[in-house]
Image 1 (tube, rainbow, N blue to C red):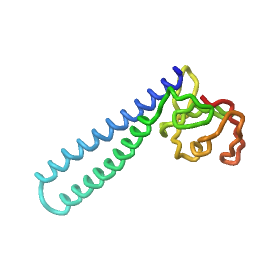
Image 2: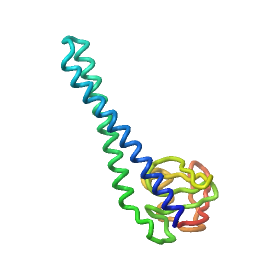
Image 3: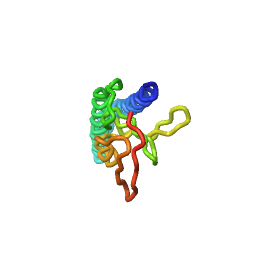
Length: 149
């Protein structure tokens, strides 16, 4: 399944790019903290350190989310064939095509849009376990499932 492999590769690239960004932020903040300790004392110094600490905590939370995405991708078995939507399925509906994986947003393969969605997202939860020709209701719209690969 070349299409699913390409979507999977794009999801991996998305996660790796996010990981690199967060690692750069953490590295930059660590350098900032080290230089803050060498600078002048006083309120300005304490405020700067507190801001950097908050940035580090935020980056840590982002890193945790990225690691969870990596774990989710590691669970995907592209060779698994099933007509029931599961993690790693490509679900085509009359509205859009969804790759049940991680929340990576819109991906484009051969000029066609696909949406990488987490199975814990609202649309992902609705699609999970569904089969061809089933209907789901999302945001007040009836959506029919055309195929599950």
